[in-house]
Image (tube, rainbow, N blue to C red; front, side):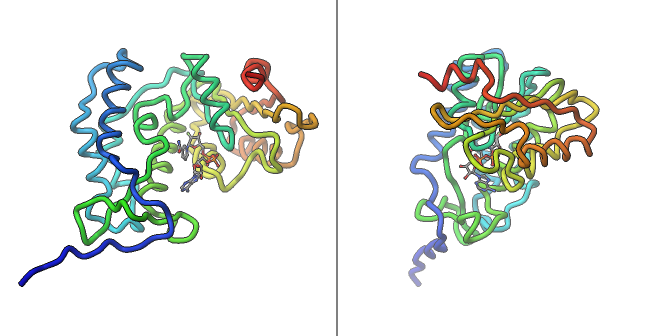
Length: 250
Ligand code: 2NF
């Protein structure tokens, strides 16, 4: 009897990025050989296999932190104290800043974040292939999808590892610069370790040309202030931090 491959299930989100595995591997070698050779040896072959094993042949809506555990173990990376930079709704600006300040790290300046940034991926329980046609959309299909669970897991570790004074770039041109539903608001803030994080420094940036307002005293930032107070982590906030302001002008 001829058995046709069973088609993948259809989802509302975009499918796996074309050439996902090749891009992942290329980025792993680029990061470890060229961007941060001081990181020391990392086995990109093993890392690539652990990445795909986390989601291939599995239901993309039942992904768990444990699925990514082997990958996490192969990619641990120390970020020096005082050098962690979180961001929320300010991706471009935060990354422009770490390009200039090479000793500060966003998650995407660490190996695993660098490899996965901007890619999409999912598998299917009925197939050993990636699904290039569609993947679950986290709002419309399921929140525990392989892609969201990955970012929640790596963001959690990134926050747990942070120490000293940690920083966040927030977007002061939207009504809720601190969004409790964002990864920063749901995951990162709650996984900072009070015993080693001395303070969270927020830089709230307004778009050039927008009417200047004091976002640091807005109700949205107050929520962040109170969460940190409850968690015994000091907080300070600055509107339009100069060194980042300069980057908005170019
Ligand atoms: O793609 C990334 N590089 C990424 C994704 C999610 C989280 C990075 N992060 C980490 C970074 F380290 C930042 O510190 O979390 C922080 C930024 O996440 P955020 O949710 O606070 O910031 P947003 O600007 O709201 O979102 C960033 C991107 O992630 C997507 C969102 O659509 C945007 O493209 N995103 C956020 N939450 C989810 C989710 N649960 C999500 N995509 C899928 N599932």
